Image 1: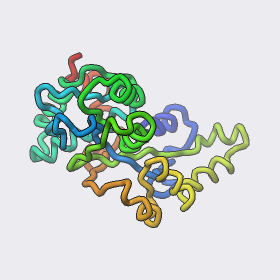
Image 2: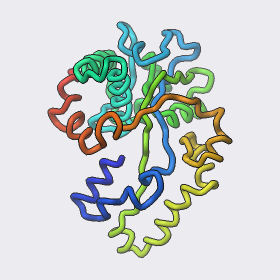
Image 3: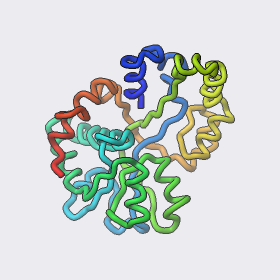
Length: 247
């Protein structure tokens, strides 16, 4: 996550704090978003975020205190609630609190949550990165689960960076930089799309448009003021998540 790389730059002094300016799209070569994975036939009729707070709906999502992917899930729900309630933070907090009351178990990571839902059969809906959901259908749950795309979601942005001081120490600066630049090439973008990440390159995105449905997306910067502020407000000890979640 960008917040993690910022920490490496600021606290470890291992790369420039302006690392996101070194590659296109703020050093984010491809993207994803947050969707729902439901049981085959969608027996609980889950279509949008509002359905996740209904009584009797069992929601699977990881712990945002330990999982980067789970933070995107949390923020996607929060952003939806803001849009539905005239940007009221109190209403958003109330909405997300209700959602987590429907979560029977918080796995430590996204892959563990996927296993809980798909292989252990726990829960009615899994909140998931789109690429993880598509991969789960292909490898684990073909014929047993299906994807539901909500009306609005967050633009999930996995960044990349060369850790300069480490690369210099090992003499790998040139090849590391070349690898990251390769991710932006048509071939690199095609590999990303085949692994269910949304490509940045328009020509490649057009090739895979049937896999990635159109969806209204918002960003962390637009809604939350960037990762530094978001981490401190929502996920630090004593932050909003700690206030609203009671296991």
